[in-house]
Amino acid sequence: MARIAIAQPRQVEAVYRESYALWGGGLSYDGYLDLWRDLRATPWGRRNLMFQVLVDDRGEVRSSLKCYRVTFRIDGDAVPGVVIGALFTPARHRRRGHARVLLEGVLARAAADGGRVALLYSDVGRTFYERSGFRPVDASDAFGRVPRGQRGPDGWRLVAMTREHRHAVAAAREATAARARF
Image 1 (cartoon, rainbow, N blue to C red):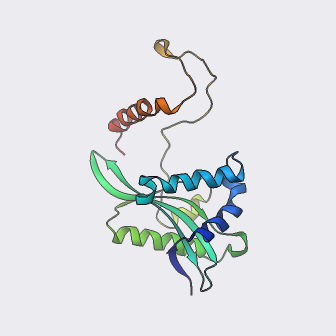
Image 2 (image 1 turned 90 degrees about the vertical axis):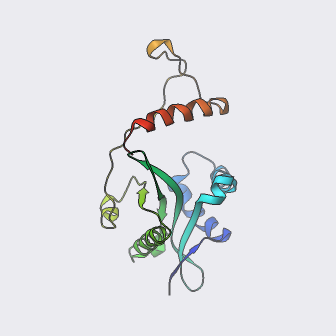
Image 3 (image 1 turned 45 degrees about the horizontal axis):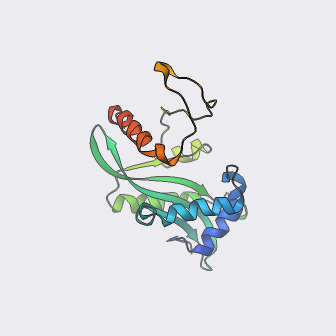
């Protein structure tokens, strides 16, 4: 009988070993592990990031995901919810419904805990997620590389971001978000 649980370190490592090729993003394997270990170790991560797994009776991972507790702002109101990412099923367990069982179980738990909104990031499987009630949302942000030192409107200059920029970037993002409906 499969059950949903908070992942144990050995289960997390097993998922990362297989998912690294998909989501390593140019990091070394150790860098990939360090990134997620560091995020989970922050005060915010300890409170809000849950790595959840669907496991069998032996504790073997059938499917996994990351679930972040967040507060959304919708039309100016604070609304509790979750962001789900990195839904992953090891290759040997795919096409058996494990991901759907895990996703729907996590959503049900979030709703029971007062969550009213769920956002899921994925660049694959749109139809799969629509069957679980998700619908696409148009992206309003763009990402990419900007040539170093390029001049912008009003004479501002683009530079590589450093830790010292984080407060200004967060303030700019908040100002943009304050005008958005979601």
